[in-house]
Length: 104
Image 1 (cartoon, rainbow, N blue to C red):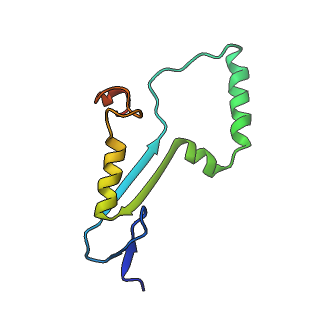
Image 2: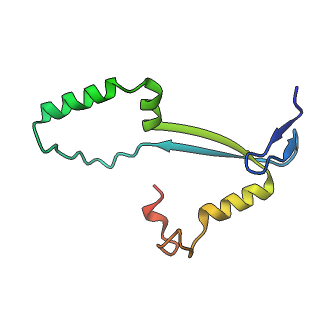
Image 3: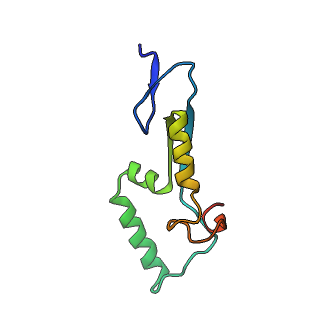
């Protein structure tokens, strides 16, 4: 039996009882309440969507709706990951600390 866990980011061994963090990422399809009407007949669109869905496997459909990940990080990697995600003023975030467009 292993007596340690491994940092997802750097691969460092983290003995049980040591300082470590769990990052949980939940990805879910968002619905803003708007349903766009199809250009053509709604029944034709309904049939098209049903046939499209029938060709996909169940796991692919589930991934389109929801995914959940848990990652273990050491303290240093947690700090780096947090800085990168919340970085402001750089080229990745053009909204100058206004995260309202990104976060529910």
